[in-house]
Each structure stands twice: as structure tokens, then as C-alpha cells.
Image (cartoon, rainbow, N blue to C red; front, top):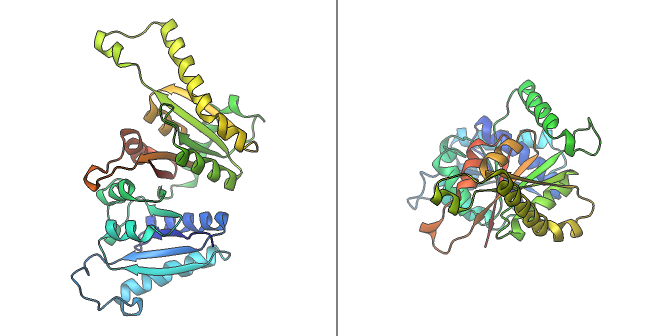
Length: 306
């Protein structure tokens, strides 16, 4: 059976939006959807509310209402509900271990306060053992359409058919150490959506230029750019062969985080990696992933890798 898609819900509009995004993802994957609600203040050994039927009325109504709304809007997905009696971060990380994907809203309340821009969302992103998607809150349709139109205009030269909007999954690629987990996730998500992959490599000037205190000449910049483009092409060669049906656009620019944020406008999904570390105290998000989580205009997937 395909592993479930897990989503944290707390009754906030953001977590409800995340639940609907997760339901659509579950349908694409042919996977069940699991709605999880946390009661972090019940972690002192008491089991009074261990049975969801014994939850306080407000929590009971919220969980049931969210499940009902998701089932009505996405009738093809199997929806289950669950409660974890644990602090939000620990509970989410533990519950996600036997699932295929964890989804959270961008800024929840209650047990999931501060998601994405706060401590809980960042902590879960740094510790989750499965890919985590953080979903931005819904914005006015006119604003979303304007952003998508601007993004399409900027990418017109890369489109095979001028004027036809092509859905994209944007993935950040570290050409020095390409991650199979990150790239495999991005290509899989693109295939599920019938989208193309925009592989983005942002590079920085070699430290030597900072030491000597001057910028490279135009010729040197062109040489550096060419070298980085070749490195990206080499990193993607095997994936192009394994996924001949997926269109790939390669983009190399100075500045990784800025490029990913700019390319997130109008994207279906942005995929970044997070390196696993052996000790819990060392778990941190890299600067690129951190910046993208805070500033991207699309849902962001953080994929753990070795």
C-alpha cells in the first residue's frame, strides 16, 4: 500500500488549506490521507483524552469538521483522523516516520503555532525523516494570477510553445554534491503533475575574489558561468535519461537563494534539500533552504538526504 500523506491540522485557515493541498497530493499518489491533531499540554502521563472520542468538544468538532470538508471537496481520497498527545514538533516528527510525506500550513495556531516562519515549522523541517511540504496560505486569485502572468512572461523564451503556460517543479541543485533523494523527489512530483522540472543552480564567487577584494572581469565571469553550467548538466544527465518524458530547464545564476525565490513565482512546488546530521543538536537548515522557506511564493518541499 502506498504510504499515507500526513497533514497537521489545528482548525486555522492555514492548516485547512494545507489539508486540501495534501488531499490533492494524496489523490495524485493514490495514497490515503491522515489528519493529525496535537494536544501538547497533555504530556504529563494523563491518558484522559487518549481516545479521540474523549477530546474536549471544540477539538472534537474541529477534527471532524476538517475531515468532512476534505472528504466533500476530494471525494476520491480515503481520509483518516488521529490525535497525538505530545508536543507539536516531537509528535509530528514521530508520526511522520511511517508516512510518505508530511504537510503543514504556513502559520498555524494552538499545537502548531508559528509554522513556517516560526520555531515549530522550522524545527520540524530540520528534524523530519520524510519529505516535508510547507504550504503558503491562500491569497487573492487576482494576485496569484498576476504573479503567474509575470512568471510566464519571464520564462517565455524557455517555453516550447509560446503563450502556453507550462506547470513547473523548481528544484535547487548543489552541483558539488548532487542529492539523489532531492532530484528523485522533484522528478517524481513533476511526473505526477505533468510538469517540467526547472533545475536551478545558484553559484557564488570563489573565495579568492573576496580575499583580494575585487570583482572578476567580464571574461572571467563568463568562464565561471560556463563551468557552472557544465557542472549542472553533468549532475542532471542521468535524470534526463531516466525521465525522457519530463522536460527539463536548466538555470544557472549568481545567488542560489535569490534565484529559487524568484523562480518560485507561479511554480507548482519548490524542492530544496536538507542534509541529515548525526546528532539532534546539530540539526539545522542550510541558509538556502532557510531563505526559501521564508520567502518562496509557492509550497516548499524540504527533502532530507545524507
